[in-house]
Length: 561
Image (spheres, one colour):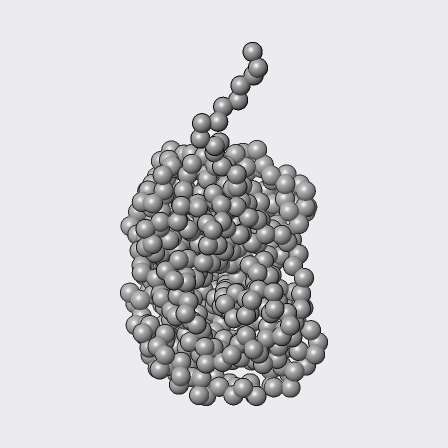
């Protein structure tokens, strides 16, 4: 199907709200224009995609403080100019003092609900897990970048010290988290001055955080993992009952992993392996969908959305049964991504009726994340997702640092004997999906987004939009989405009433949502070496392109004599 004909078969029509960017020398796409600009600044200075990505990550900790920070987790997918792919796993881990009975589960909670008494695993110091983001970013720069850490951190330091204008999106996030933020003196003073949430257009200055970033720019990751910032974090933990220790910081190691590689209609799909759930389950769902003519069924039709809902339920049923840190849990990756297993699951799928699925392998995470995608025009591509888990993480600021830590302990099962039960050093399972799609050995698409458990289902839908429906990149990232993992099928407002009625007639219970998952960032690579970047309406996403280039060889400007 060509990129101009998908609408002819569509059951859902929509109009894009944003414009893509086009360039040949570099592309930076993130969920904030200042972060995209930071990446473009590095590319314009001669840096590569890794330099730009790290600059963008640090900038995002300033301009999206509700989503990402130094005391968080990261899954980074790097494609180098030599064609190799590297996954850097900087996900947060259970502190060394953690144990299966460290919280008191709320009696009678459903298996997928990890609520504990006093919300200790959700808000406050006891919810903080050992961080890995800073070490992952610094390792990526050291191994694959070309610029000094101090240089790539300058945009972040500048925006923290001088301030930036609060967007309506950030203002809404502050308001949503306001009741918890108000309980912390430092967070309240910064984000709720005079007891009121910052309004859109207000200037947010983070002087103490600028000083912390400056320290990192001079000392590297050691500033947190063994240095002054780490000392202040550990002191805070000890005074307030938190579990992260100095040993957790100094002994944390970033894991390098090989990507999961799937095949779909002649395309190679590459994504992160366990403990990320995304790569294996996207490959699994594509294997099942390959048995259907999705292009003919059309975008956003009852048939297509029904199939998407069913494969999502299959994936989540299997995810619940076999998902986790491969150092602690045996994850049957080969079985999940096999064609035979896809055939078995497809035979049970009823094209006319919704099915209740259970796991076939026999073997909760936060929705507030951020993502960036960047390429340098020389063959280096980075797609990376990072987070402090929930909105504003643990919802307090570490004194003397300006840092908001993660609340990743909320992602572990507080009950014994399950795949995600708490064990010292165990890394969180994540739905982060920094994905790439290649054809004939060349990367054609790189994409990702925030959104907790809804991330990899949304990434799957974008890949289907591009490969099956032949959408333009901007269309693929903005297209209406659906999500389910069981009883309720969430659909965005853009799905028309007649399609929703058709889904209900097949047995789906619908819930209409303003958004499903967060703002996607994507890059498309064209045969002529140019790139298209796109960000969607679900966040403050912006694509920034580096076009033009150097002067023609031998050209000089001379004034007449």
